[in-house]
Image (tube, rainbow over all chains, first blue to last red; front, side, top):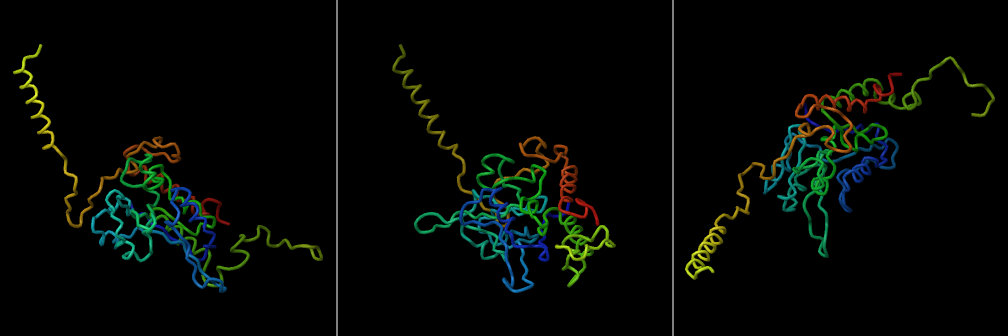
Length: 208
Length: 88
């Protein structure tokens, strides 16, 4: 089995934040914590690009390396998870992560930092699968239900792909080859498909 | 009627048991091993029966990793619109 990975296709992402909403809803993520977010570059400028970012489940995860209590582990499917019962909320993983994936719920009058929370690839955590304890601490365990992460499955344009790295890389490669590159990506045919009867012309003089 | 001697012996035995119970206290502090995961062990998703959860949609054989992978791989193709809708 290859590693579980996410790919976000910047040509397709329309910044709808559906992935963010799906994640919040599926895992009942508390206020102030965003396991996933959409980042837009050159916002408002023609040609702007958006990309959905969460934990990338690194093969050599820096969060794992810096954790002083070693609460991180990697599953057989390559998903980086952590034990919240061990986490001391020090925030080292937040500084180490290049994607800003680790999140910390703020609570109390002084905004005390709680235990770290991050994307679990919808794989839950070190509790009994699909148990209430697992859901309360880590959210939904969709992998144990034979499903893929909610964000990827909910993506309306299928910009965000999630699953076995080999499979989603094949899907992305196939897509990139079919759509071409540069100016070929844009246009009516790309958006709505090629006409079934290209010889058929619209009647002249009629309203569109 | 229990004699005073028996009562004393019984009391002493109970005190001894209660006293020794304290020696059986479990370690409450984690003994760290540098660079190793210290938390609880996790279960593998393919070790659950497919019907174990209310919301399970895929089917696989419990304990068979390859069948679980196959189920997920086929579900991954739902993300490929060239397969889902058809190549036009």
